Length: 106
Image: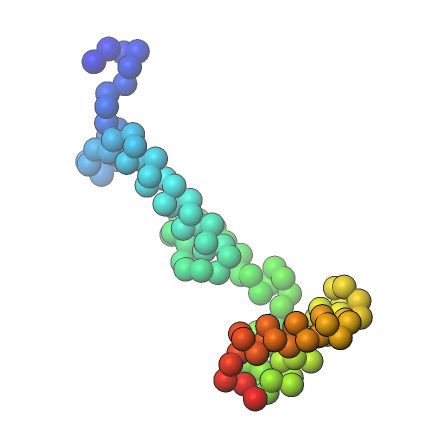
């Protein structure tokens, strides 16, 4: 091989060789894994640095709702804090969504 064009494979520190395509795939997998882990879906690789999400957002862990009424009241309060007073139609849509998401609550 000439010095202008590198060889078809890359030598990895632990002794195995990876093709450029395989190296890109592994890098993409690692990046996706880190991205998901920062969102709380899985563990970060050991080399990445993270912060505790509850410390960053200031959110305290909350207990699961005890009833459908409590969950609906909390959802309505959260939605109204963002967009103002809900209309009857918006309230009905929100109630329908909560019933679909939590079918076991009464």
